Image 1 (cartoon, rainbow, N blue to C red):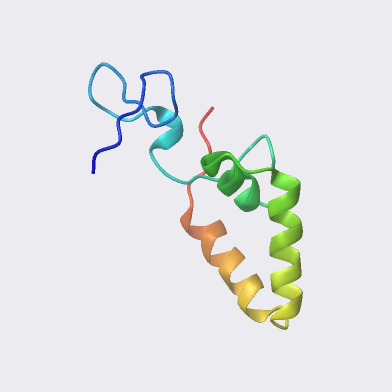
Image 2 (cartoon, rainbow, N blue to C red):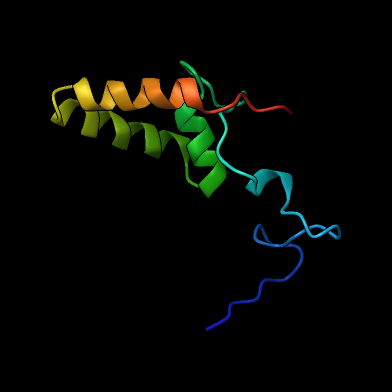
Length: 85
């Protein structure tokens, strides 16, 4: 099954055949940064609301005794590049 997307949607490619800049991968957000921009970058990449993602992340982190959530955040902080523009 093939799904085609019009050129003006987020899944469209530029005329050079490369994906649009916003779809190349995850990066830490400069615009939605509270600590390091990890949640903001994930929300920007997938089109989610930043506040909702932060609230969900906080609930999951507290429910798992903080350690996995903090570890996951630090790993993403160190591995995701900072947003260029």
